[in-house]
Image 1 (cartoon, one colour):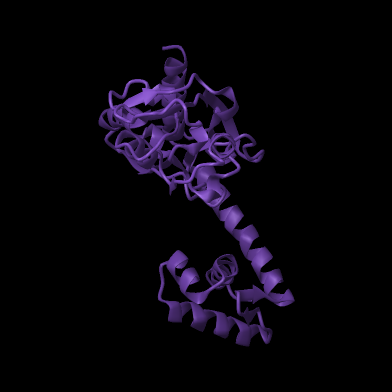
Image 2: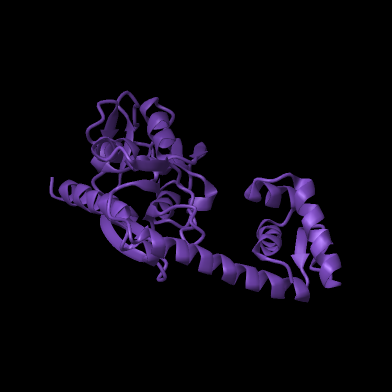
Length: 287
């Protein structure tokens, strides 16, 4: 067969399901993807994909190529990480994935680390989506999880408490059940998290519900009187525009994990950041 450069086009199309999505993932033109797949099929005298209404699906021959491509990708990534493990100074790239709830809090420490080590290049992503560590979408991830992946190096940093809050000027009629108040909640993909399972239980009668995808959005909507919602006392109790309307609710508490790929354990620049995050959460837990 050809080389890794051919196989990665097969892998990208199998993962993304469409020519355009594969092209975006590979950072090439969509015609390049189509041309390379067609040329490879011709060279192998075998169809690698069937085009269906749901996208491109691997044939039996395609699965053979795709499996080999995935193995090659894993070997290349692992080799790169082992080489990086020989670092002796804090320099190079580190990608950190942090949910936006911790953005301001963690950024202060990251800024200090960056000033101390100007050769350290940090890329910080602030989303609640789950980054794929194995495929190196990130090097270090803070993740809300009750069951972190077993193939990653993980450390539980804390259990984040939650309570119910409203805007400081939001009037709550005590004769009305909380479930009948307008609610601000996480969007449907997060329904299986403890905080959303609690919100579902408490707000099932709510006639008005706003769904959002960031913690800052929930906080800002509650601040501005759009409704009530579950926030963390670690941040909300210090906000003068919010008022607490419940004690801590243990049922909704969220485990926060720090995850890295096993191959990155010996990389000094990664360890410097993970040590900083561990210290930061330890100080918060006992403050």
